[in-house]
Image 1 (cartoon, one colour):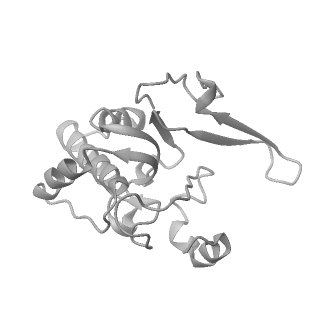
Image 2 (cartoon, helix red, strand yellow; image 1 turned 180 degrees about the vertical axis):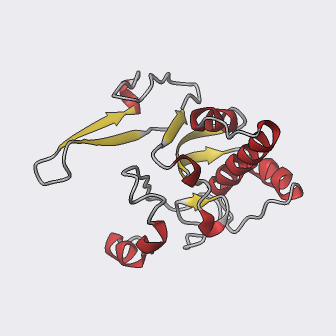
Length: 187
């Protein structure tokens, strides 16, 4: 617990091939759970559906209405493994995705999906979302909590160029990153 070297040796990187590591888009967050005990089950990232990786979320902050969202999703047949508010976000993303895809025959745009879910979250948070359905995309949004995005430009070497974009320097604009406004859950 708490030791990065122990975390690195415990990560099952082989399970992520084709979902994260080949896409060049990753998410990471280190923190102790605000809901539930510190444990592997409550650690980030949280997934919507175990090892299928439909939706994977890292989150900083607190979702005040997570208990009511969790109860509603449980009644719809969605299962939870952790005690975290973060897992509720991941499962809620899957719920909206499943229903939107069934209704229209087409999956929603990733940004629209995350924005729809974020509009139902109450609290202060920053989230980053990855999905096997949107392999080369990452959507992040925030309301109240800080968010920092690192972007590598050029070759992956000791001499590569890197950019850090911070939510404290709003609006964020870099390549395909859209402008974001403080106080709105805008992916």
